[in-house]
Length: 219
Ligand SMILES: *Cc1c(COP(=O)(O)O)cnc(C)c1O
Image (tube, rainbow, N blue to C red):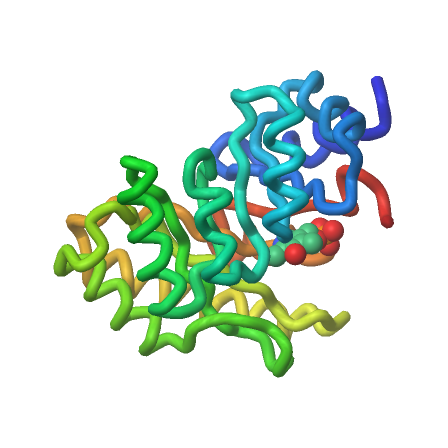
């Protein structure tokens, strides 16, 4: 077995059936992605539009591509024809553009709202109230080609496990609030946890983790 296949098998066995593992393949070559693909993996995440589009063109069409990085409105149109899930909706302006391009592509697009939970000023995301307000607008039917599936968040990059845990617990509480406020919406996805913190995220209720270096090796 290749190292990539071994890493995937180990992580899959740790996380169980009900958690989706998104293999974060940014900076990785198509050959490395194919190694994971041939080990049966289908969900891959990228954080830059150009790299995502180039890889999607080259690689097998049954790959489910996840956009996990900050998305500029002028680039939305390049991914809307094929993207499986956009994790990084962090403004109403971006949501409006995704609706417009989804309509043009004649499809419905699954999205997550990215919530700001870290205490690092550089990370993108909505605050709790903005998140609930956008969900309310989607619920009212203002974005008919967008399906809200849940939330995504990134914890502070720190060795302090208790701090990470309290940030993830906070995101889980916003997620629970979303589920109970909008019981008729198809909300079922809480994307939190990366290579360094996914065991904590899973304890806090994550059901989708985004893992790069623990699968493909450090950059
Ligand atoms: C790079 C990245 C990851 C994966 O990070 P690793 O530490 O390599 O697992 C997860 N989520 C986002 C948004 C990323 O940009």
